[in-house]
Image (cartoon, rainbow, N blue to C red; front, side, top):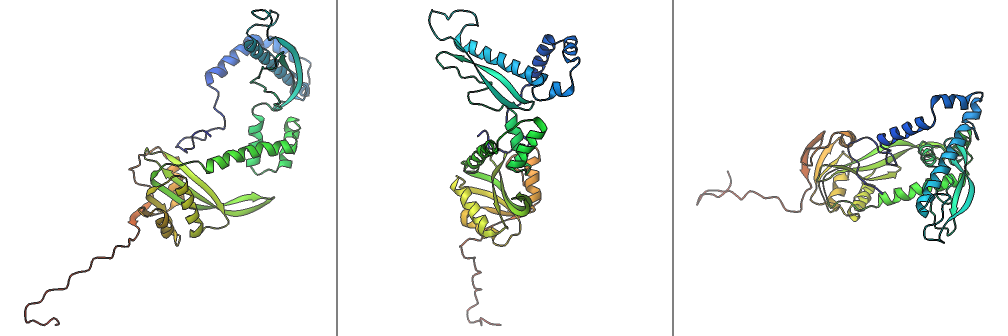
Length: 338
């Protein structure tokens, strides 16, 4: 996956954003190819469904654009434009087209993918065996994250875009994200974190068409560079020190060797669990929910900055016996008792 750190900036999209300059250049080219007068002539007499509906003008235009782009990719792959002989005599050349229908936000789009004789052409815009254009998977994931079932997503896409996507296909899209989530949850961590916030949030989640309250265990660390990083998210029915011990052991197994300051709430047994895994950690009694949210959204601070809303720090009791005062010496011949 990309960078695993959660920094104090707006939510990043799952794909890198297209530069604004590229969008403006594409608009200028489109305006030059399709002047307003030509567009008005093309749209004259067409019903709305003939423009935006399945098989309408927009989907046909999208198909033509995709076919032109695929043809340009093949020309770059072969090294010569259409209508010319292969350089150097016999070699790889064009070998017709393959018709296919891809699903998009505009609806089904029919395209013809060019082929080459040797079969070495690998198109990038619409790859081999690709049946969905970019953007449709993101909508499936957004609907799935909103709590919709696979059946509901298929019905929603059919009603809104006129796109028929099998439920097995939707399941494969969501399962691909689960693989990324599993890789994120087991990724290696830094060796030392100056500050780590531990807290559990009681949130409502949808499971099997019912809403339940679950405990979301959250650990947010501050690196030595001052960056905030979500170390992990775990789910349980309730909050307890026993599961916190399992969370701390998981962090230790993923590479965390020491925590300088652990911000925790007043859960019974929590300091003892931290002391069992990180014996040199200092504790700060804090409203960790508010502190973790402030830590994740506030401007970047250095690691030396004290955490917000934290009380005085205390260190775990050590096994060193306390020092005792030496008995008072008495004068010779004086009684030891008054």
